[in-house]
Length: 229
Figure: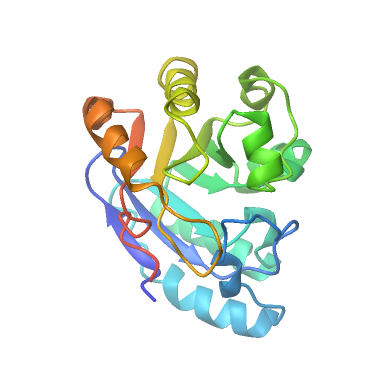
């Protein structure tokens, strides 16, 4: 698995995919990424330390993701990231967190001491589909609830059961209400959820203009950032 890469298009930055402890929720119906998690901190830190060494600081911006939330990375890994940030003069950090940790985000901001863009996997602002179909356990009513805590929602498109209207509403929100967002086109994995190929074709044509929006990043494949397997 590739765990280090550079994002050279929008929002240039280095990116690390590190290992983490088990996800606080771990029950999303579309996710098998948690298979990368481990309960062995020694194993996690050994792998993570080798990847952190690769960071050069060339863009002064770093994104760190894991198969869960940043709060599930061991303390030693977090300390090693902090050391690298100081060593390389990194001035901005992207991190990801589940909705369940929304009240703890300032703890991470205080720990690192630099501006953090916090991503969160919303998947859709449609409350029923998010929680009843995707089992995301992110219970809120409106996008304003998310905006109180997070800078950048991650949206998923192309799952059987989604509708064009649902996607239109999601795109309108992330384009007009957030300073940054990521759109992931669903790629089938070991879960039972299926792709809606017709819906994806429609989305790629209807929203081709997202490529020109600096604050929206679209991943047609889940490895488009250069990390993963």
